[in-house]
Length: 455
Image (cartoon, rainbow, N blue to C red; front, side, top):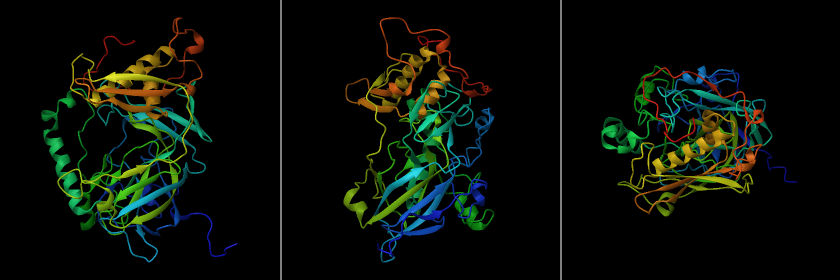
């Protein structure tokens, strides 16, 4: 045996679940900024382990109440582990213009913390894709049995998880950060008046602009002049952007590889927001099975890779996007029930090739159908957000209708959910109790009703 070859990953960011995110040995952060200092350094080719808290940092509990979701302070999300400086075998750091290939060697929940949650935020506090239909805060708790998950709040359902990080990305340069802040500020200031889509999608705000409220900047201590400056301009972690970030691609599991553009020296890789499972779109917003967890990663630096492989889709060389290589590990499902949506909204109004409206209709169609089998619509909204369902844009050229589909694996249910010549089964066996944990909606915004849908 080679005595010099070390076995097992090197732990670079440990997590103590008994401590708050800001109390960790390697302090966490919840913003993107080039001046957030790295907390560790790794060499390319080295397998290293990164542990992380859940996206809310332990604020959401297993209590039989959705009050923690209703009053969640969203300025704190997400808590990211890192930044991690990446260097080559000679100690030369990744440089702007390089491409950082990050391979996911292994991942999972932290030992002793094998549970998670799926939720919808209150419409007045974040909402979700269908917040005009489901304005109340709701929550379901999931427990893990190896690769499988089940929830007491959604009985009769069990499925294997496709575990993945919701967020993985590199630090932006100052120039890129300014581009983000300018365009997102313009959206907030003018979006409602300039985009018709805002009439049928009701999640607000339209973008989350920089704010010192809830800001955590790793090693930079709050209250210092440096903290004040960075907190006022650091980007929120909520959307995915050119650096990767919150892409929420459910297939990035074991064996996957992410090719991230490098904008600062060392790349400053960060990750977090671990998901045990997620459906395409994560439609309820807090919609995966959120959990604490770990990643075991290996990096490779592709010198000048941005110019070689990424084509800018914008006015500067910084307007690029990552490339993702899906790994070989996925659940096997052979039978699916597929729901279609077209770009006609709930009022019957036609939209032109609008894939977002079409996907909203597909999800609403699936929720309404599945509620015929003894479930509440709130249960199915949460389920379609976190189970391994497949979303597709099936048609984007046949004017005026875009066509989107949502495919649901039938094997996750303990009953046959396919249409039959006989009527939908009824009876005590199909009454699914308990329901999801929920709170009242105390706002005064109108709730959208589907006139032809199930009650």
